Amino acid sequence: MNSLKSITFGELTGYMIERIIKRSITKRLFRGKAIVLIGARQVGKTTLIRELLRDRDYLFLDGDDPLVKQRLTNPNTKEIETIIGNSEIVFIDEAQRIENIGITAKIIHDQFKSVQLVMSGSSAFELRNQTNEPLTGRKFEYFLYPVSYEEYEQSIGYLDAIKDLENRLVYGFYPDVINNRGEEREVLNEITQSYLFKDILSFANIKKPEVLEKILQALAFQVGSEVSYNEIAQLTGVDKNTVSSYIHLLELSFIVYPITSFSRNLRNEIKTNQKIYFYDNGIRNALIQNFNPVQLRNDIGALWENFLMSERLKRNHYHQKYCNRYFWRTKQQQEIDYVEEADGKITGFEFKWNPKAKTNIPSNFVQTYNAQVEIISKENFREFVGG
Image (cartoon, rainbow, N blue to C red; front, side, top):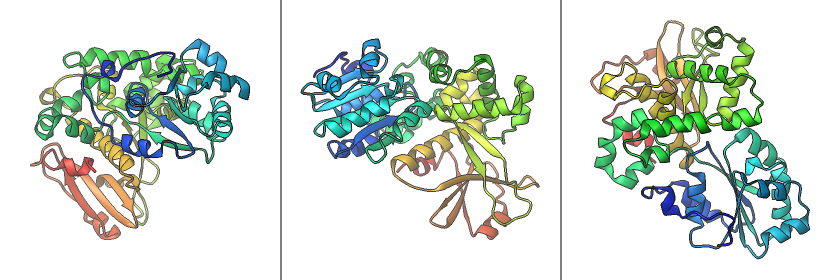
């Protein structure tokens, strides 16, 4: 392998967790387009690409390396040819750190037809802004989440995964968390303190990082509830527009994502509100510094809902199940936790950690939208989160 920096896959993980999209990416190698893998920091992008290129020779270029940054910023074709040499595969890691990487990638794609370019990046707002226009029609783009429950179960087996479910609700699915048993709290604190804000602070010119942290903590306490920007503004001492722009940055950096309310026919439906979920339970719990076991928590409903929402997101993305996603609520407080609309069909889902908990399904939702409503509990959740 022609490489500026070499790390074996075995050094990066305690054991192999096969990522679902590995097969899809492998099929796209040498199909005439660049491969771009995006995701939050520390979710395993570098590990995944190294694994799928394991039996091949490739040039590894680290976007955090000052020399790499210097040489790949606005190079001409001759300079790129010198860097690439005889390499048939070029892997640029942390590509968002390199200024104008989109233009450089376009030159590699257009001028070196036999070279397969692979790039990874952790910052959507930077990497996508830089690559979308130059690489239009020239790339296959993939998104990598933290490890999914489906991937985890396939790796360690059904019984062990079920046995570990409560731990995963508390600590989440970041690879380093999974691979450092007994040290989950320290690993999550390191991720949140050292990595979580890195892209936002460096690229978005945030003036008040402490405000960003307060907003995140407020969102962590409101998982499963409708979010009021006005309320968060009062809690954090900034104006509503600042709250809105900071939350947008948190979305672009893959920390949180919104779900809007579903509304079509009924006059008393809530039409403009949204809920905000975290991509990972462990990150959410680290922000509020609550790693108590499930039995000692009063927020198990929120943990369960956030887990199911993020796992469904992974499942739909990896298995290409396309749908619109909402929650539903009326002014009379009737609600459905989660609504999917696919091919004209509307399905509602109610999330209950306790399978024996009483559930009232709003009849006006079912009748108005000819909808089915399913109750998802710890006894039947595997089909909901699996392919």
